[in-house]
Every structure is written in structure tokens, then in C-alpha cells.
Length: 405
Image (cartoon, rainbow, N blue to C red; front, side, top):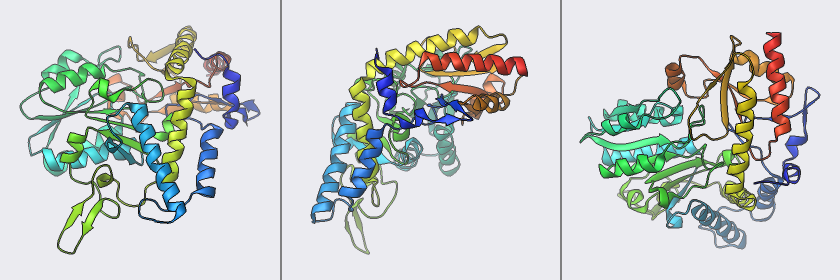
């Protein structure tokens, strides 16, 4: 458990800001997390001390930047417990990573009539890429239903497999419901059918210890900005056997071994999937963010955030007219709710006047909203730098808005 919360909060200067003359309470962590000064300083250090294009330069700065970038890859490998650095592909984020797999996997492994299984709680970034491939390749999309408590219907999942199933692609944690899906079981079931699995870990990596080898995941993706790192950098982990089979997603420099006007030979892993100049500043800052998380301890973070969520759930449930969406047995630090007939946008706007940042709307999960029979929710999402005192202020503010409206 985390004990010295005030010391941690000092690492995040933005938390000392005021909004409308109120202390900032930042409960929009599922959208993006704030950055500790160590990460920002790593970005500054990179640009001021080792800024040079990497891999092909023979001069000192290029060699130093290359070493920092590849050490960052090794850090991500260690953080996810991947088998080798070659299984770590740097992308711009979760969305690009899923698009990469959707495009390359469909090109290499799917024919018209083949099927991909996703779930009813997916973010648009794990729906739309498959719809693009459905229109392009004629593949079919099957959907795992979501039950009343916000849990996947696993019996129905087992029934979705057929001889045409080629891939399962599901989220580890729902960004709306906070549901922690049984991804190990999902993977095991798929593997009994000889089907690989892609896991969207955007909401999981900041909150849980992720071991891709223990999970058995064939592909696992996440974004740096959701785990206290910079924007514009993300990760695709892929088993080497699968990455070797897939064609490049983009063409250009870095992803080639040799080029003639007659033929191009692609580079080895991981560079085959990293066309162009990589974000070598972002990768090193992401590695610094992961080191920061490890310093606190992923298990400590999970325990502390779970305590915050249980506390907030109990307090929020006591408010008259509140409906919480997502009652799964295993949840992460997300609370989606509505209060009486108050529109989620109105609640969010008024909470903002109290200095409280929450997210409102459909959270890029419109199909799930349709299942829930609503247009959107208010979403409060917590981090290890949040406190129970902030939750008390939040609860009092929700009550004040309810009374007002």
C-alpha cells in the first residue's frame, strides 16, 4: 500500500494548480494520466543532450540516442515480461498498434468469410479497424455479449468459435465499466481452437501487473500517455512467431534491409514494423515512466487504487438517484455513473466549476452505450496520486449538483 502520498503528489506539479479558484482534482485518468517531473525532465534531457537521428549515424550523438532508444525497448520488454526486445514494436499508441495488427494480420491470414471475435465493451479503436477490414476483405465480426453486471458472457464466447475464426481481439479492462476481463481464460479458450489473441491493455498497464508470457497473449498493446508517459508513443508486443509471419504495416526508411527498383528486402524484427524516424525521445521518456511506476510498485498501486475505488463507490452509491454502470466482481479504478435525470454533460460542466475534472459522454464506446440504453455517462477514474479527501470533495460536489438541478 502507498503511504507517502504527499511526496508522490509533489512529483506532479500540475496537481498543485487551481481551477476557478478551486484546487484541481483530476479524475480523468482513464483518458490520460498526468506526468511526473522525472518524465518531463527525461524529455528535456533527450532534446538538450542526445538529440540525433538513430541507428544509421556513426557520430557520437547518433550512437548515444540509438543506445537510449534500444535500452527503452529493453525496459518495455522487462516491464511486460516479453521473451525478447525484438517482440516490442514502438507505435504512436494503442490505436495505431491495433490498426497495425488488423491490417497486417488480415493481409497475411484472412480471407473473405473469415471471422474475428471482439467484445461488446470495446473502445472504438478495437472496433473500427476490424470494420475497415470487413469492408476491405469481406471478413465477419462476431461480438461477445455483455451481461447486466458489465461482465462478458463467457458461455456465449465459447459458442462464437467456428472453423472460420482467425483472431480474438478484446480489451483487458473496460474504459467505461472498469471491468477486468478474464483475459487468461479468454486466451486459453481461443488457443484450444488454434486462434491467436490480441489484448488491448490501454487501461490495464497503468493499474495491474502485466506478464504477457504468463497470460499467453499473442499480441498486447498499450499507450504511453495512460501510464504516466508522453503522448504519441505506444507499444505493440507480439510473439516473434507471429510478427515474423506478418507483412509490414508501412513502408519507408528503417524497415528495410536492402532496396532496389526491382525488389525490397525487409528488415529484421522489430524494425520491420517501424518505418521512418522513430520517436526516440518519447521511447526514453516512456521507459522513465515505467521505472517511476516500478519504484512505487505495481502491486502497491493496484492495492491503493482499489481502496480508492471501493471508498468512492460506497460514497457515491449513497447519493439519491445515482446509477453506477459496471458492477463486475473484478473492477479497476473507473466509476461511470448518472444521477437522476441530470444530463452527463451538465454534471461534468458543473463539477468542473468545483475544480473537478471528470469525463462525460460515450467514452468512444457507443455500441456499449446502446446496450446500456443510455447516451453517455459521467466517468471518474482514479490514479495513485489521488486521495480520499479529493473523493470526499467530489462526492459533496455531486450532491450539490443533484440538489441544484
